[in-house]
Length: 183
Image (cartoon, rainbow, N blue to C red; front, side, top):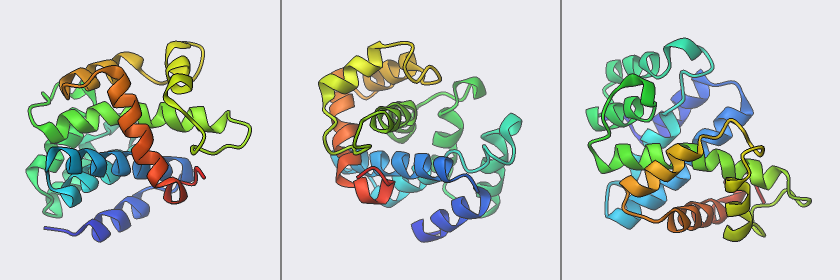
């Protein structure tokens, strides 16, 4: 099985956009945190997070199929491939595993959190709190591309309230603010 270091190098080789790379790192950070919370394999979950959108830039109309095809060829575990396929609702792949439920749950939320940081005067995640994030969540005009229903659905699939999910992912991203360029 490839290592996380190899997964990261693969994502970087396939992705030129700095903002897309940061998004995948944010999803990786959230996936690591949920893996720890649920007692799962942190490296495996991190790989799913860091690779989930690797083909989006090169093959937007064939995402996530092209990436999964390459990952399968390289010997990545089926659990990771299934989670990547299931994170995109339009694939029709059911989210049966905890990993696939978590990837779906954090994907849109990390985008919302990042957008909320970018409109802060200091552009730092460190001062962002859940009430402020929840206000942004409720404001449909803010970060219009973020699917709020998928965030709600994802929290529910993990057995968490929306507030718990928001707080958990926000704290995970705060702990890695330097890595994510959000300090």
